[in-house]
Amino acid sequence: MKTYHGDSEITRLHDLGWAYREAMVLGLTNKMGIFTALAGGEMTLEQLSQSCGTKTEATEKLLIACVAMELLKKSEDKYRNSEIGQKYLVRGGELFQGDIIAHSDSVRKLWDEFEKGIFVEPKPEDPSVEHRNFIIGMDNLAAGGRGRIFADCIDLSGRKKLMDVGGGPGSYSIAACKRYPELTATVFDLPETIAIAREVIAREGMADRVSVTEGNWDTDSFGEGNDVVLLSNILHGPISNSDMKLGKAYDSMTAGGAEGGGLLVVQEFLMNDEKTGPLIPALFNIMVGAWSQAELLDVIGKAGFKDARLVSSCEEIGCAWITAVKP
Ligand SMILES: C[S@@+](CC[C@H](N)C(=O)[O-])C[C@H]1O[C@@H](n2cnc3c(N)ncnc32)[C@H](O)[C@@H]1O
Image (cartoon, rainbow, N blue to C red; front, side, top):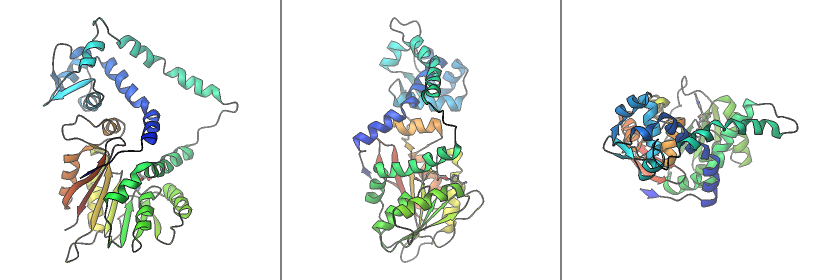
């Protein structure tokens, strides 16, 4: 397994852009009274949820993030305050800071008002701009470091046909085809995304090797004869229907033989098996969902793949790459 580091300037910008997530975790857990509930010692998730009157599943996501943010500690299945949590976040403590944290929460809406007033001609909200930001944003991420890690740690020598399911802008298909001259790729995605992928593929001059297919993973198959299937950032934890996507990937792939079977390549935000971090997957888990490493390897194995393994990870940018083969 290779460990990578993110570009420090880009990582800094991303950390600034996403900083509201940690503010939300601190504000919410302060509001729930998590730290005050733990003032007297450690508690399980169930005890804490009961004490704070909160739902267990959502509470666990916040607790994982608090451990990653070093506000809590976890041993076995019990949580306790870290030194900083105990000193500043327990109501009644001499140096309690929870009231000002609650105040910062309640004045957050002033920023929305500030934004509304800043443009001379207010811009109407446009959902297509949001979708474009999302999809081209994936291309930004690939250019900002993930593409380099992919190219460095995934060996596609001798592979001919790659299916990039939910491929978005097609950045990884393009990078793979540029590096491996015998490879062709298909970006499979919803029509509104495929329109953007076409632009990116044309921009990179790769339309002869990277094609597109409009499709929906809920209703369509992923074709046949694929010797590589790429599932990049589409297996986001238990809510993502990972088993369905992996099953369709498996069915679309060439089986093993003398030359070996089809290769599955997965990029994901992965939490550690103790569920104490790292921070970026822990925050992504609250927003969308994330597997732990062991959970995702297990789901991949249950879909019939063999030799599922973590081939690389980069903690600063929160990406991990996994491969497995169809026997
Ligand atoms: C997080 S993006 C990942 C994009 C790309 N794989 C990457 O890593 O850069 C998720 C992608 O899944 C696509 N998607 C969402 N729902 C889909 C569906 N039902 N069928 C096919 N693609 C879908 C989105 O359009 C988007 O491109």
